[in-house]
Picture 1 (cartoon, rainbow, N blue to C red):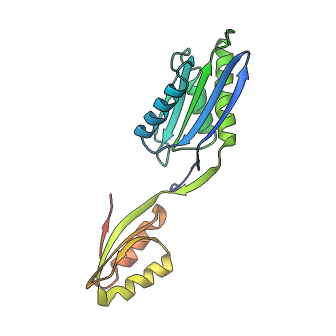
Picture 2: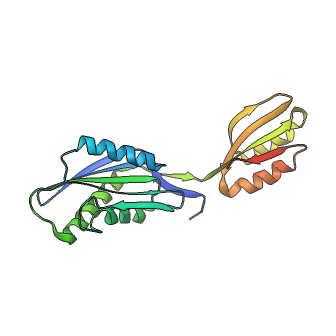
Picture 3: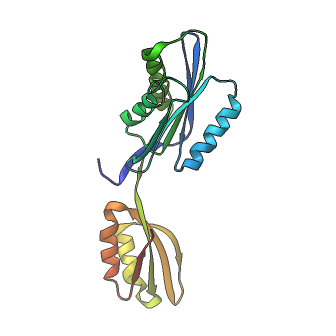
Length: 201
C-alpha cells in the first residue's frame, strides 16, 4: 500500500445484533481527534444511560499509529480488543466503533463475549461506506506578479489543489498535494524565478 494513502469511513453507521437475550448496538463514526471520540461517547452514554456496557475502540492517523480499546467493565480483552481487531482487519483508520450492550440475563462467557463484540464490529463496518484518502502536504508560495507565469505552468502540469490565492504585486498561493508528490512540486516551484516556498507544518 502506498504510504500516503489510507482507508476510512465516509459517514456514521449503526447496526444491532441479539445474542442469547443480550442486545448489542454498534455505532461507527469517522473521527480525527480524541475530543471527537469523547463527544460521541458522552452522547451515547446519555442516550443509552441504562445500558450495561459501552465498549469501544478507535484508531487514528494515516498509519493508524494511535489507537485505544476499552472493555468498560466487561472481562479484560473480551470487548475493546475484538472491536479493534475488526478495525485492523478492515485496514481502517480515523474511526471510532462503540458497542452498547444490554445484558439479557444469560451470561455469555469469555468466548461468547469475544464472538458477540467481534460480530457487532464486523457488521457495523460492513454497513459503512469505505473511502480512500490521501495524506496531503500544504505549503505557501510567494512570487512577484511578473514571475507568476512560471509558477502557474508548474501548477497546471502537476495539478495540486489550490487552497487559496491572492494576486497583487506579490502573489500568494496556498497549495496542497499528496505527500508522495510534495517534494517534486516544491523542487519545481523552487526553480521558478524569485518564488519563495514555505511548507506548512
